[in-house]
Structures are given as C-alpha cells and as structure tokens.
Length: 510
Image (cartoon, rainbow, N blue to C red; front, side, top):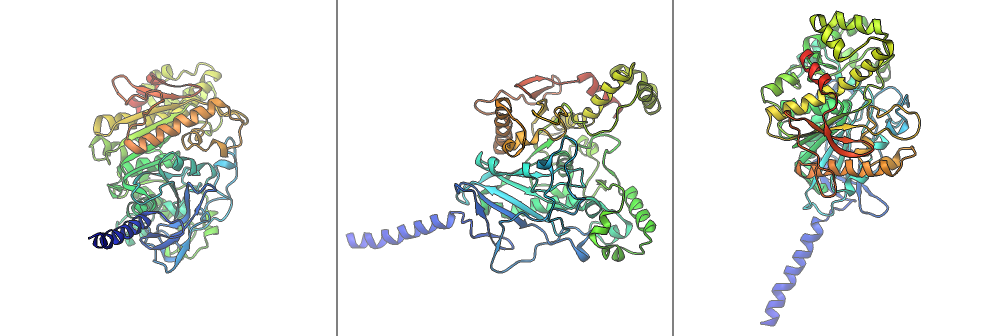
C-alpha cells in the first residue's frame, strides 16, 4: 500500500513542480503572438524590462500612410533589450523649460518606429497586475516612448505593469488626402498616429498576460499630446473594450473650435493643396519621397475629427456614447508657459471685442485688461485655462453622462532650480511617474513627498479605479454641484475648484 501511494504521489509532485515552473516569467523566453522575445532585468532582478517590442509592421514603403498592419511572425528568440527607434521628427533639442530629460533620444529616428516597452515586477503569469499604458506628449510632432522621464521601473515596483508606446508623428502620422481616404478600408485618412495607439492597445490586450499583466484592467494615461490622445481614445468607437480607466494630464478637445482638430474635408483639402504645391501627381509618388525630405515640409498637421476613428468629443459625451471609464484628469498652474509674447491692454481688448461681440463686456470683467500688466495676467490665466477648461469639462461631462467616477487635480508645485517657469506644462508627470531621480534639479523633501503621493494616487487608480489609499489625503470624487480638486503643491490637500468664475464663463463661450 505504501509503495502504491509513493507511485501516485511522486508523479503528482513532479507535475506540480512542472506547473509552477511553467507559470514563472522567464525574461529570456516570453511567448507573444508573433514569436518569442527576451528581455533584461534590473540589477536586483526585481523588474523585467523588454524594450522595442514590435506591435505592428514597420509603416514604410507601401505601408506609409496606411492603418497599422500585423507584425510578421519570426523564428527563434528576438532580443528586446535596446531602446527602439523613435518616430521621425525634427532632431530633439531641449528648449525653454523642457530639458533633455523631456526629449526623445537624439537617435535613432526612423519611420520604422511602431514598438513598445514593458516594465514588469510580476513573477508569474498568474499575478494579473494592473496595466498602465503611457502615451507620450510632444504636440504630435515630437516625443517617444523612451523619453528618460517615462522610465517605468519605479512604477512597476509600485505594482503595475508599465508600458510606453511609440506612434507616428507629424506628416507621417496625420496627413489626410482624398486619395488616401479612397484607398482606406475605413474610407478616411489622417489619424494614423491614433490608429497606431489603438493597435498598441490591441497588442496589450492579446499579449500582456504573458508579462503578468491583467488584460481586463488596463489604464491609458498621458500628458499634453498624450492627454489629447487619451481623449481621442475615450471617444473612439475603434478603441472600445481596449482599456478600463483613463488618466489625462493637461489636454482635451471639448471646445467648438476643435483645438488641434479639423474636419476630414478640411484635412483632405489641406493634403491636396500640399501635393499640388509640391507638384506631386499621386500618393505613390509621395510615398517614394525619402522620409528626411518629408520632414522639411513646413506646416502642422494634427487630429482629424473624421467621425470614423474620432467623432466630435463634446457631441459624443453629450450623447453618452463615449467609452465610459473612470477618470483622473487635471492641469497645471502654469500650463500656458509656451504660448508666445503677452499682449498690450489695447491689443487684448481689441481681440476680445472682435471675437466675442455681445459677450465682450462680460469677458473683460472676468479677464480684465485695464493696464498692460493686467492684460498680461489675464492672458497668462487664459493660456492656463485653455488646457484647464478642457480637463474640467471632461470631469463634468463624465460625471453627468457616464457611470465611471471622475477625479480632478490642480498641480501647483514649482520644480526647484533653473530655469523657473513656474508649475509649467508637463512639470507634473515626473512626479506622477516617480522619476524625479532621473531629472537634474535640486529636489527637496517636499518634492519627494509629492512624488510619492502622486505616484501612489496614480497606481491606486490603476488598480481599483479609486486613487485613494492608506496614508494619502482624501481625494474627493468630482461633484459638479460643489466641485473640488486635489491640490498637488507644497502640500497635498483637497481644495475648492480654482478660478470657478473664469471656468464657468468659458463654458458659456465654448
């Protein structure tokens, strides 16, 4: 009888050991849909890192200005240990308050750019950690998933699988043209950069479990153009079911002026005018032009509100047709730092009277310009609220037209050191992503406490949809009847909505 039990128990133990081994994530061999990849680890082996994982075929040659196509499977093990090429863009150079830590690496830059990077502290595929997919900023003309301050190691140590992605930029990501629309299965053009983001999210849904992530608990997040992108993904019917929460930092498109967006007809007309000016007879001819030459073409291309990939944002929310997910959103006290010279009193008043007609008097009461100094302060506030109003409106619209909860923040901390541009546009994300140690500024205990609080809020939200947690000041759910924010400054505290009169007046004119 004892021998019989041994014969049964030993194979069972071997089988259990085999199962346990198969559940472990081996950094040297992770199976994804297209093949096997290998990565690397941090020195303490706590975090596994996979850099340059392809999520779509290279958009080159005939695939330039086409929707992203599937990756061609490979044999053997593909090493994913080095940073991939960033999307084609002007040479990344620091400017104003944005130092080298905010820039894409200077090289390589390539059209062959559709790669993502993964940081995971999961030990087994059964860990099912929440996933955060970060969409980079850069005005849709620059940036990269390998910007130094996007490094995901610290966030992965806090309990999320952190993913950064690349997407096509500028003319490569947003050119619309009647010929391109005609050849597309979707019968639209432009928005290739947004389609790249959607392709990356599909890849995450299909593959992230192999890295210990939960494909049913994905948070999309981004700042500046990344925040605009999150806004687009939240309204896009093509992104439905690919994410479950959203974090949007300084950016959205709720105004009637569409901000960076334009209609498909206008975008196609612009593309046609471009090819005619270049004396290009066909898209085939345009596809044959070297990427470096295309980069030199002046002008700015952006989001196309084509009602296919991207419907009108306000209209979509008003109808309750958005992808209904919980939301963290907010803006910075000096978001408008980059918006040019300040107007004189006379210039400010003349602009208001020409644009706002019968609302001009009220406008000048809310945003006074009796002196040049007063006009300058009003202009600075307006540039801040040109971001802030969209994020405030997003919280309001999600609260009134969705079931997911919204949480609004106001970032006030001025990073120490020079140059001093205040709590400038994008100053917040290194605090939220716990990467201050990678930013060369003389940070103090105040900064590190804020970093720990913000990153904890962000991680808690990715885990549960609620940023609150032990040891953190309570962040109230947004309530349009009595709007509050979490104020992220020298102190972290709940506070009344800043500039309520100005924001509510902007509601009227938008």
